Length: 243
Ligand code: 6PG
Image 1 (cartoon, rainbow, N blue to C red):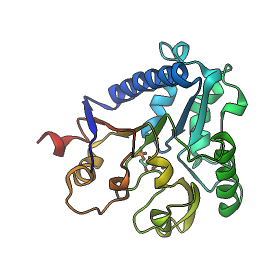
Image 2: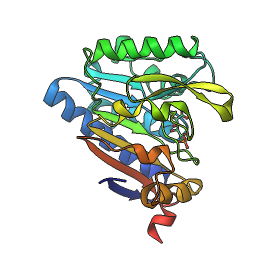
Image 3: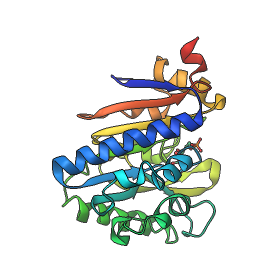
């Protein structure tokens, strides 16, 4: 894996707090520099506490919500009310608590649609927002699956080879279903990519992803072309790192 910055914090709560500090810092920098902050949120369970922290003080009043645009790095092919939905998780933890956040600043993936339509519609939304230029998110939040996946780029799935489309439907054999995900060209074009990894169950795969000789895992293909790659991990996940 190319150059990256690692920060190890004691536990999942401190990881969320540190992630919130980084989020606020990047948001204010982006808005000061180019008037807008675009972020692609990750799903799963790790970022939930981060989203809840952002909705509360001291972080909430330090974000210019009217200039912040929230996208999703990936989504499940389910309706927004499903307990599988990444949108639902972010909406319950964050969006629904921020009256200052204009609804048009929340760019939801229409997971309720047929996968190919949801992907095509979202790619069009990205083209509209980024004026047909390859999206350059100010921040992309990513998680790390125990199998080394990130976003919905799973091992041996077709989207790993996608280098033209920005957002695709990705058949995931083990789920026997589609997932919806940003592709590597967009992810790697971000200004900052921040992995959030917590828990002992991630220590083995994390050590492999960071130091493994072969490129066996999708997360190892995350290498920002011009931006920075940061890993924020708790001590439990860093166990193999610290040894
Ligand atoms: C998703 C996520 C996925 C997640 C990893 C880690 O839609 O589930 O985008 O890539 O980040 O699976 O999930 P945890 O943070 O819950 O371990």
